[in-house]
Image 1 (tube, rainbow, N blue to C red):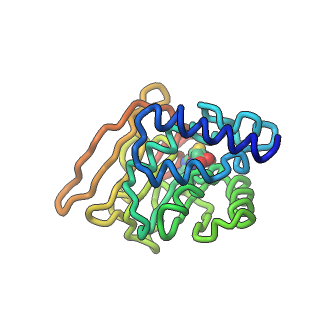
Image 2 (cartoon, protein in one colour; image 1 turned 120 degrees about the vertical axis):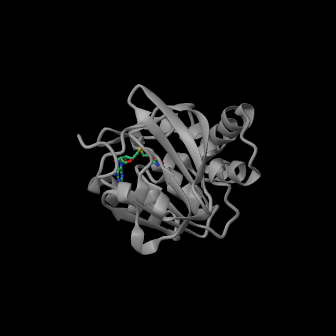
Image 3 (cartoon, rainbow, N blue to C red; image 1 turned 30 degrees about the vertical axis):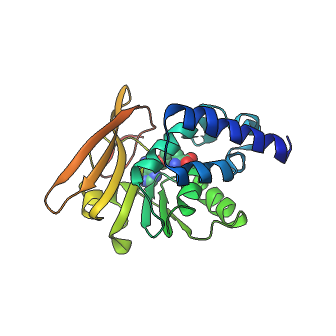
Length: 217
Ligand code: SAH
């Protein structure tokens, strides 16, 4: 498939899947119309890279549906100067989007194989303000805290306390919680005292596995 075909598919993705469903943040729309999603998808699925669905990326994991990437990114309300933490690097597509909208991105992946592959792709494609870390992201990255935004792209049983602790006041935590059958995406804003918790939509993510996530494999 040639570059023009991918560009045309990407244009349609943005118009029909994102604008058509109410994504309004112009910066998010612009970046998603530029970042080559197909580069982050395994070769055998590239033909479907811009379709309205998640796709397998190996290790039983998935790259999220484009609309889910867009709405989660929009919920971070980025302006460009932020230091962001992503939990669940996976394919690296979400990290690449964030890297164009924030100053610095740290992203944690528990599967070494995915972390290695994604680190190489991000380097090759020039997303130089992203650092991929291998480990359990449910505990966050205390040494680099506080973050102005934290995004979790796997489903947690509850809001991990470590992540709230590492969020700056006024910062946003975007995270799905629930069980395999019933999940809600939250936008949590950290206040001087406590948090404001907005339910954004119902969703379906792979489990967040770790100390502050699900315990089993
Ligand atoms: N943001 C990704 C979506 C990947 S799916 C993308 O753009 O492609 C979620 C990922 O979270 C999986 O790769 C899974 O291995 C990872 N994951 C699950 N629990 C984790 C944990 N505790 N720490 C880090 N990564 C985790």
